Image (cartoon, rainbow, N blue to C red; front, side, top):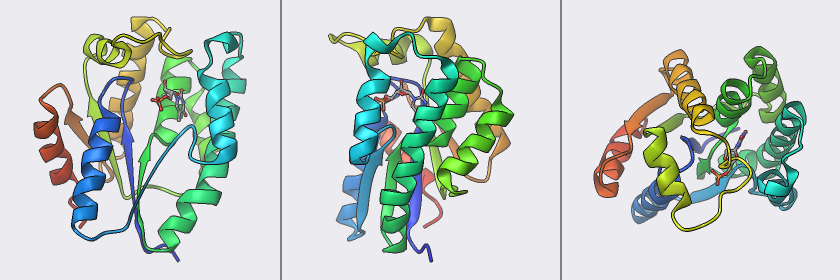
Length: 205
Ligand code: TMP
């Protein structure tokens, strides 16, 4: 039996997911709620190994389908080992990315058939659907500028602007397809203003 709540944050690189997840987790904990923050790829020992591989610029020769399978493998391990057990314990699970990233990046970004990816995601997630998806929407130039700052880009961040335009579009289309769980938040504003909007969007409470 799943008694907790499952919140997912999505958005292009640099949308501010990490900052907002930290702020929301703090807010929920202050209310005495049990919160678990996790991420994809990653979140498990095996997942962190896959993450290292997936983000390494040296692996630029990976085939797009192989890439999709590895993100799915990471998800399968994550759902079984971390997310479902925490939800069964009644925790609020906040996840930085989930299967919507695969549709946006591998589907809209790389051009893999989204019907195929939806089936793959269904297997990988064991059909687990979040209670809320917070889509932090930001224009691509601002997002990438924020993501990169002073550091070197990872394997996905090397992609061209047009790739991220497609990814952003892919997210917005998914939000239209699943209005019951998605909330789109304009993420270009000041971080506390964005946080106010995010908390207001957690309206299942
Ligand atoms: P991030 O967690 O630091 O945002 O980095 C993860 C990167 O992996 C990011 O560029 C998005 C990408 N990604 C996919 O392409 N497909 C996926 O299914 C997931 C979860 C992430």
